[in-house]
Structures are given as C-alpha cells and as structure tokens.
Length: 400
Image (cartoon, rainbow, N blue to C red; front, side, top):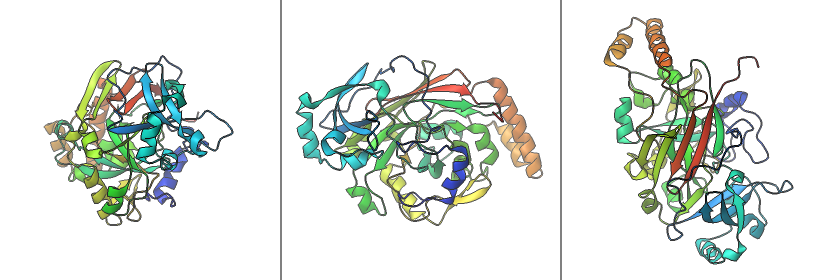
C-alpha cells in the first residue's frame, strides 16, 4: 500500500467499500464515530508533558467557515478542559493535518508562546478531535513487547499493514455476532515529512500520540499463517476497518524523542478494571527500527488482505498521511490456543479439515463471552499522551 501523501493504493480503494466519504476534517464519517455524550473523561494518571520535554498540541473545529480545524498549543489540562493558544488563528492556517500548522512555529517560537499565557483560551475536552493522520494506510508492529509475545505464543516482533481511518478520543466500536473483539493500546507516531531514508527520519519532527488497535481475533485465527506467524499474514484482515483505530486528543512533539518515550506509559481499562499496563521503553523494535525495516521491505514483501496480496508500501516512503503503530503490552483477551487444538489443526488432512477444527475452536471461544461485548466501555490512557474512550455497541443487522 502507498504510505505517501499523493498516491492512493489499490488496497486503500478496496477498503473504501466499508468507509463513508471523508468529512471536511479529512476523517471518515464512520471511522471513530463519536460515542454518545457522556461525563467528562477519566483523567486518572494523565498529565501534560513538561514543557522542557515536549510541546503538546490538540485540534478542534470551532469555525464552520474555516477550511479545517484549529490547531492548538496546549498549556494546561484540567478535568473539564484545557487552556491553549490557537496557532491557526496566529498563522492564518487551518487544516486537517496539525503538522501543516505546527511547522509554522519552531521550538523557540513555541517556547515564547508558552511564556504568554494571556493569549490562551479555555476549551472543553469534549470539543477536542483525534490527532491521527488522514490516510487509510499505516504500518503496525506485532508482538513488539516481550510480555505480549509470551501471552500470545509468538516469538519475535514483526510488521504488517493496517488499513483504517483514524478516529477520535470518544468513539464507538461495533461487535457483531461471531466477532471476537479484542483491544490493544499503543503509542503511535507520525511525521512532519515523507520518510524515504533514515536521514529523513532523523530530520523529521516526530509527533507521538495515543492510539487503540481493535482486532477481530476470529478473523485473525482463520487467516493467520500457522507455520509462519511472524509473516504478518492475516493481521491486516483482522485489524482493518472503519472503527478499529481510535486516536487520542494530544499530538506531542518531544525535544528528545528517545528520552521522552523512556518515560511514556500506556494502559487499558475495561469497565473500570485494569487490563493492560506497559512502558514504551520496553518495546522490542524501537521506532527507527520499525521505520528502517518498513523502508527496506518496500516492494519486496506482500501480505494477505481479503483474499489478495498487498505490499507494505508501494514505494519506499512513509508519508505524512500515515502512522506507525508501535505495538502493545500484555493483558489482551487473546491467548495462544492450547497444544491439543494446535496439534489437531496442524495434523488435519487438508485445509477444509483445518478450518473445521478452527471453527469449533472459535465457537468455543465465543461461548465463553470473554471478548468485548456490547455495553463494555474501553479506556486507553497514557501519562503524557492523553486518553481514549470507546463504547462497544452491537453491529447493525445485515441489510440495515
């Protein structure tokens, strides 16, 4: 798939059948569908990154006549809102890509604005948009935390494509009959320029944000390559779709990205109960390794997606409309199938017999009702990257 700003890949066009035309903000009307109005978000453990470590940005649409959202420099965070300086008003530039506005201000100019709190206004948290990029095609790292690899029975980190429109910090995700819906919280990254080399990576402003990665484990189990799980086959099918990629409200640009990530934590709660807790510093493949391997594999590797094959990138570039998902920690619902199931699958005489075993296993997993169900509420959070609240709803009946 193309990860550049200018090209649209065949894989992305295939996905368009399940996405509605983009909104004026460049985001799909389905992707990240806002959840129903609720109380103020739970900000437990969430703070702004200190100014000596990073600048924090947010976006909101406050002028219907503007070409896009306003991009804000966030100064303070409180339970009901933020105080922030409107960079779009200062620069005269409104647009869906926050980096288009941020690039008008270097670090010194931003530091000067931080020292002018009289310029700030207060904005409700409920008005903040997601800060994910506008494209459909993203690079994701699987089992990139040792503990998650251990719990799922996968030895080693690997990369795969994810095709999803970025949603926002308050959204719904649909659970349909037969879907084994699982959650993952991740640190995501995006860049202020197209990356064609590691020199581009080094020069780029790097924006970190919180993201979620919802997965249909039933689709994954049906499509995964059991003889080579780290091929990544099946993952694009299981993790792509219009409501699988929520993003938080803060785009954080660190002064020193390595030092910053060493302090970042991420967590998941389901219905208030803790499920995941991880430190970004524990990832196996760090951010430059993911970028380097993506560029190296451009045009040389393909992944299965809905019965066909797609490349990670059509040309050696990670564009500004794409994100890098760096992986999740342990605590997801999915566990490696038992040895007896694996043996039965691997020794089955032919694919039809294998699928019969797999379907029996999936039916048993569905009967346990341990995966996300309509009515569940998922909260992803990070100490510096903000929060995401996702309400699980029943998928509309077929034909409606």
